[in-house]
Image (cartoon, rainbow, N blue to C red; front, side, top):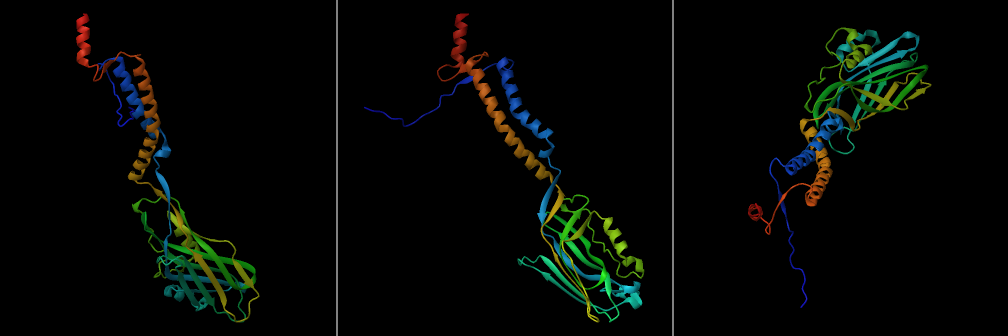
Length: 317
């Protein structure tokens, strides 16, 4: 009659030793290596405990309904206009009422603006020619996924040329610039203070240099990267000077501090990675040493028990 295997069981053997024996000390050393070595590797490696990380988020950029424009004309004269009534009152004869058009563009329909289009037309007389300008547009810059951060920021468009211009076009990308990392959760510095005091009667408060200095004192700001601005010359007399700009708001890289949970998770993953090879090495070494009989052990199994061992030894004595 032929037979085939229907069940299989492993045979286990217990090797026992006294607490102060060499075998017990050897087992304790292997346990210390198995646990202690991965812990030591995790502790001494600074990359496993990251204090900072980079996250990516598309900011919510909101137009503040506020612009300032200053045109440099031939002969040292100038024109100015703003959506700020107090600024216009301070301009006096240089004030020139202008036409402004703005549009927020949401391409993917997620209610977060992906771009912003702005057009400004400044009327000119037949004798006036524009050789340069400064155009300031104010926004609110908001992050709200990994941290809550809100600040007032300004986009500056500037150009000057030796020949008079008829219009200016720019297509740029708004970039987030940090001097320090942001904290996760609720940020401890929120630069919501306006860059311009719209009720101020001091003309120096609206100066471009003053605004730039205020931006420089902050831990974060924005920069408009424009690759190829277009300055069109040969203006037509009495034709308004035309400024057009498209500003894109892409996903930004945000430098942030990591949370305690993030550090522990990273360290735990690294500990598990190092634990496996040390465990396999110590398991193989323990099996080889104990099976070879290099250390004195008492084998305890169903066929050879501790009771029979001590009975046999006491009979020999």
